[in-house]
Image (cartoon, rainbow over all chains, first blue to last red; front, side):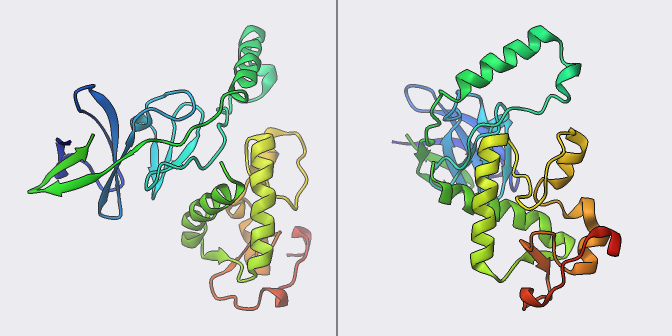
Length: 131
Length: 108
């Protein structure tokens, strides 16, 4: 079923926008690339972080949490998750280092899934998503 | 995720960085594929696509200067050769990458 989720003017060229649609209030991330609008699940296929807070470079969206990347055109995962660079290890307090090590271990056991994608159409300046 | 998908995305992202610097991917497709393959593997192992042709020192500030595409950190050297150290990138006007010389930075 088609749902109007935003106006075309609501999203900047190369931008991302968080919207909700459908009876289950689904979280969707709209992406503008090269004059077209794409819609993917807002939740990262790695650890569910909000992709709408990430970065869009062409057709590649990068998750703000562990930098996993996805192709907005088909939802395909394009990279492994990568830790943020926290600087030299000897400048990080030991309890925080232990947390990072645990997180890294768990991260590599977490499979990264492709994103769900949605059909999009634009009618009279309104963006509609098929949910 | 396939290695091919990662190589394709690295190629796309790198191209957006090197074009404004006056560089492009080498016309030698076999070389490009081999180097991107190595970088995708390095990124998976170490968290960043370090240059496969230069050694890391373990000093973060130095190692980040060989994170591909590393052209901005070695501009004078690479401009003199019209290629990066690996040969992954060449100047926009280069059509025959095999004709380009490779020499160390202290010979610039």
